[in-house]
Image (cartoon, rainbow, N blue to C red; front, side, top):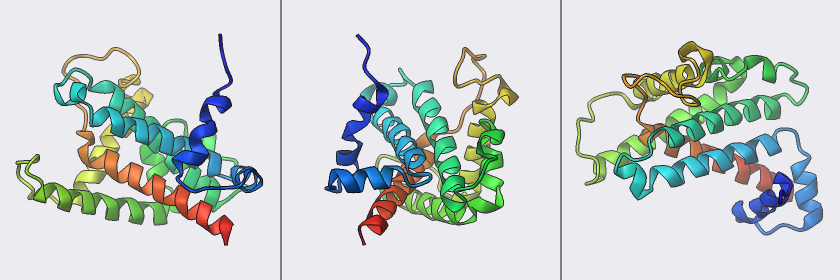
Length: 199
């Protein structure tokens, strides 16, 4: 038996953790870009759940969290374009090119927010006993390097490597900084849009 995806997505209202009346929710849902933001948040949340799993830590599942992260990132960047300009008609013309979306002029504020979140994640990782490693790299430079590689893996540039079987030697970025930063910003944007509509 099949059920519509939207029925499954009814819990989104609760996932935002803001109690809303149905009329308010319907109004918010119709705001340009909000549905894209919600979907981005869902994928990024799922990526973070997998990344925190025992299976991921044991190296059993590596590609699925990256695939969810890439798709959620693409949706977040496209949501940003739509909310910045509800008349934007070029969103689909970007295809799956995360790097091109990142560099679009309309992504300027989102870039600032994501780099700030990445820096905060980087600083938190330095304090964590879980991450014993060299932290001599610049978080912003590393974030962009990881994001560019994620984009390559998400597009035809490397034969959609996150979707299909790939050569064993294919290298991918660690999602440890990308994932939390992306999810945090997507969540902040969803909550900010919800709060703005309540005022």
